[in-house]
Image (cartoon, rainbow, N blue to C red; front, side, top):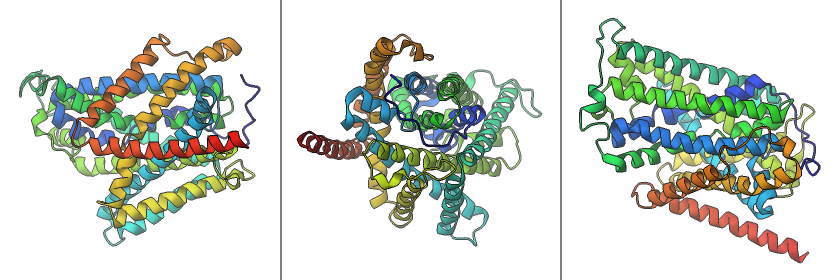
Length: 455
């Protein structure tokens, strides 16, 4: 299985601690700190069940990815796996779709962080903040991979510290241990319409609202190729990330809906700030603003890294311009970084100039792409597991649970989410635009395949 893998020319500067924190921090973003408010507004306390369902799908995808990446680590991760499992068209399609997803989302993160910074220093215009962030992180990504690792390590550490502190304070408030608090009991979970005030349809709407917050987990399997012992490192990172993420996400949702009536939540407002305000933490809004700011910059850094490594891997396999293959003395694919940043800059400009038209279409075009990528990961794992068992069973250091049943279950769940999105007025444009973008990439992949066969 390993003999056909070319040696990675990239640096091996990432340590286990970098990967573990990347696995944890990559998924703790603004989607959790702010976006969860919209989920609570539609599902009520049932948002806990929504997060359990969405988290279970993400956990299964991570386990599949972990299995394939520990058996055959590569900087293109699931794009390489898709190519091996299904052919060049699959590797090309999933690689370019994921790259497009990252560089568009990067614009949302840069703009979001710039808005917060502009609130702190109104004298500096929003576009100037975007420029500063892009220049700083481009520099960090061009210098050495360990710089990227250190940035992510400390960003993730701050986010994890914030969530753990929130959970501790929240639990103390629930039991009435904090000053001026009394035990809240279960009234907020069972009052205001009960635990499922909008029934199971509310839980489903909650899943649609929160599932995309789990995007970003995949970057850890891309980064594993740049560690000293990729097979072992990715296994450990996946194992630790999966359980802790469920603890952070589901745990903090439980604290929020136990402490506050779900009817008091407003979409767009952070439920974390509402809880900290309610239990009397001074400057709660500003503290949370800092955490969200760090979360956005962390995601920006991770997406820049992930997109550059994905396009580099595509170039390695002849699916992107060969010029992107140039690697610096320190093992950094600088041209791939600059190509990703260049498109990221274009996305940011579109976001600043036409947020409600051109950029909205681009954002819709990547809205459901994550689910298409996850589905291809599952199909690849179904095909590759049998092949690895035949050819190199000793490389299966991390196995998918209950194979193949849970892989099929995850695929069915993803299909169900896509169908439900089609029937949801707000989510339908995302599915249709994303399907259009996917069809366009598949068409290009098909034409390339035909040309290759003719030669």
